[in-house]
Length: 284
Image 1: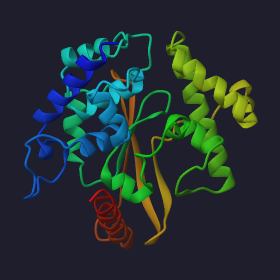
Image 2: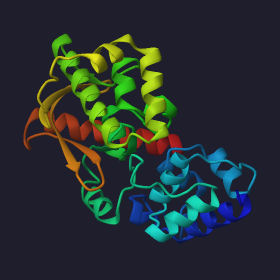
Image 3: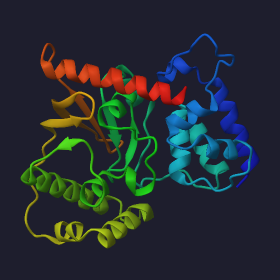
Image 4: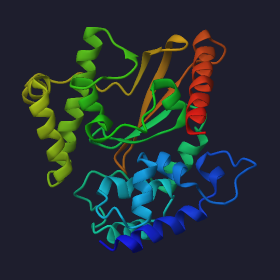
């Protein structure tokens, strides 16, 4: 990899991104017009130390996932994204790989939902991005690494999340996730990262293997449902949880809302305010 060229490109593109275009406050004390290193690291879901080493050419093997995350956080064009992949020693992902690209049009949609909890997953149910209100509602996602970013693993073998499920609801949720992952595996048989994910799930979770090999039809898709979130500061919140499928990009966008004027809407607003303030204080 041309590590120095990679780092120089990241620094150059970081300097041109205005904070308000990615939902960050400008602030009075800001000297540079672009993103601070810590801000880009947070947007890309990597540590500031690792980003420093990348920019200085001391880290020489960023994964394709890291490159994609940086390209997304920097709002790169398709041509610039392909260049960043080449500088990192990777071929730009082709049609045989699960896409995690958030196009400019999808990003504009997400920007319009900047005050609403939103999370985006790719077709393998690996987290692509989560906005600040989502982290405020469900817990900070920027520290998640590797398998922690995959919803199938988190639900079947990992810590789960703040959603409250009955045993029956949890079983149905797991069955839907595995069924969708099986369809994804059929669409992307050459994706090595996807095969590795399935192998790790099978090794860590007998429940995954049971569902994968089951002849029982999975529950019907449930793109819109009510969910109860157990928030540590404001208690339980009942929300509408709608999952939108971006067909051409094979992304899943999940949006959490409450009916205006209800107690749940008030609790959601409070959770977002408290959580967002906590995140800001932590980064200050």
